Length: 47
Image (cartoon, rainbow, N blue to C red; front, side, top):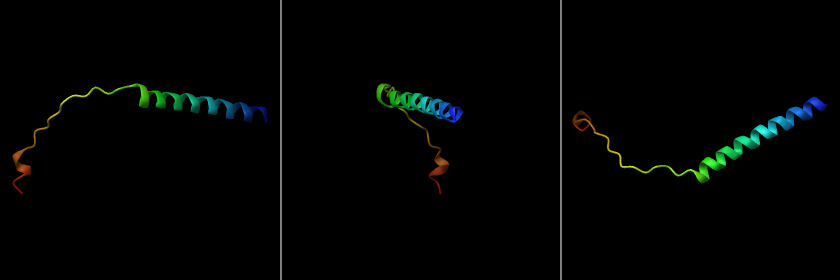
């Protein structure tokens, strides 16, 4: 039984760290905004 509790604690810690990393990436990191243009070939309009 103690090994089961240890496994659950390790999984909970790993899950908490992953959740914290995802939260920090979603809320603290601002993406760089830049203008983007993609050329479209004329063959796509000829149909």
